[in-house]
Amino acid sequence: MNRSVQDLDGQGLRGGLLIVSQFTLAADTSGGNRPSFTQAAAPDEGRRLYEHFVAQARAAHSIVHTGVFGADMQVHLVNDGPVTLLLEVA
Image (cartoon, rainbow, N blue to C red):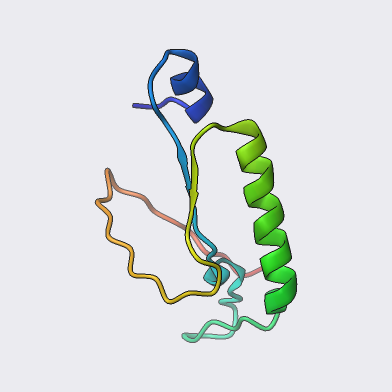
């Protein structure tokens, strides 16, 4: 099903967003086997950006759930289909 949350809302179906902070997206993988997070925002700035993003999402969508910023969360999911992410070092 390739529909956006906005498409679901427009058809009377229930769709929502789950927003979870994920600092590992800021990882620099150019240094070998261990990623570096030195370019990630400081925790206070990261929280501010996360809360701003959540506020923007809530303004645009009726159903928005969040994780707890900075928490050690255990997430269980089922992946649907193969996904390949290519990490290239420039």
